Length: 178
Image 1 (spheres, helix red, strand yellow):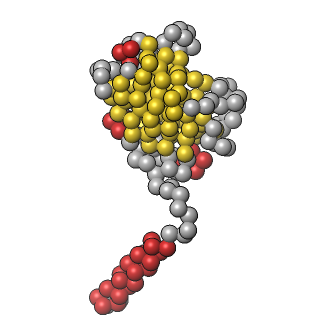
Image 2 (cartoon, rainbow, N blue to C red):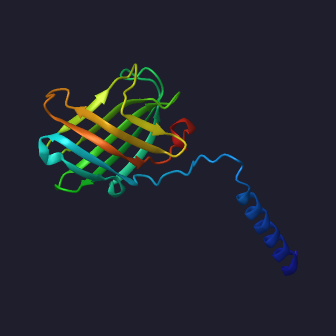
Image 3 (cartoon, rainbow, N blue to C red):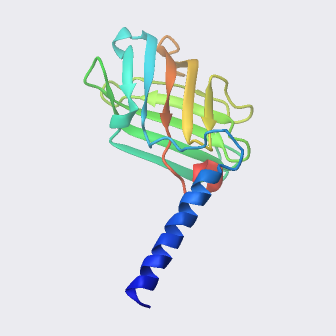
């Protein structure tokens, strides 16, 4: 190939890419994936109150989205989104954020928060029916908490209400958000 034919090929490919990009396809739903961890979760009405404040999920030390087969705790294939080392706006604690959801329909089965600094842990788990107040949009890879109260199973007086959303990392399995 000559330099001239390479230039024509490059321009042709660029024109094709721009044309296809402009097509749009007619579906106005935004399916742009959120950046992994991007977002914020606000904790309020917490017991103890030291946990009230914002979790800046964009500053998580690590983020993962793994697919799991059915196991003893959850009888169906599920996805596990985990953020570790999330910073808090009002204290020096680092938090872990976990959201597990069914691969078949995206229904959230478990949502929990934990800080190893104090051992404070709250959550909600229902492997059969799923839980309300937390949703996952697989297309945009976003987890959203809507006034979800999480409690400690050992000491129900420990609790918090969570609002906000964050981007889930990509998974190698489409049902988990690839």
